Every structure is written in structure tokens, then in C-alpha cells.
Amino acid sequence: MNVRLKRIILLFVVFPLGTIFFCLLGFIHWSFLVLAYLHFYIVVKTASRIKCPQCGTPMGSHKHKWGDTTFFMYSPLTKKNCDNCGYKF
Image 1 (tube, rainbow, N blue to C red):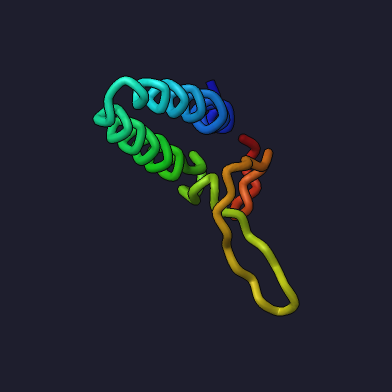
Image 2 (cartoon, rainbow, N blue to C red):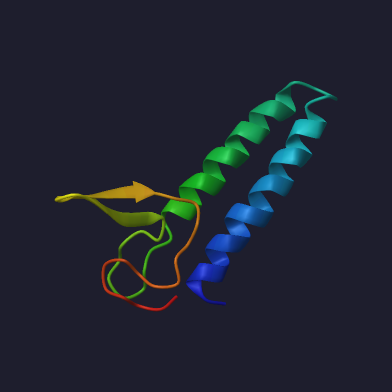
């Protein structure tokens, strides 16, 4: 399984299903809402640590250019190529 597919599964399958599950359990007892928050934190932290295998740039960090200024922004969407080295995910 390639790095891009791992990140897509984590952010668009595991995150929503786990959050819905814990929030529904929150109707039974309020302490499950704490687990929903911890689930959110763990998934986002794990997704932000997935990096390009070649250069080590985080996959969520995308390079944008506005005029003469170049800046990086985080996005949950994953491009097909690394912005830094051009490696195909």
C-alpha cells in the first residue's frame, strides 16, 4: 500500500467513522465524547506525520505562490506528486 493511499484511508474513512461512532456513544454517556476528542487528536497527528519517502516533506504541506511570496499551507487533500522533490506517491 503506497503512502498516498494510507493517508486517504486514514483521513476519509477511519476519521469520519470513528468520530461518528464515539459521538453516538456520547448519547449513552458523556465520557465517550472524551474518546471522540482523543480519536480526533490521534488521527490528525498520525496523518500529519506521514511524509514523502524520498525527501521527508510532510504530505499535507503544499507549496503555494502568491506574487513573489512562496508559502506552505496544510491541506487534507493529497497531491499525486511531492511539491518538494517531485516523487510520485
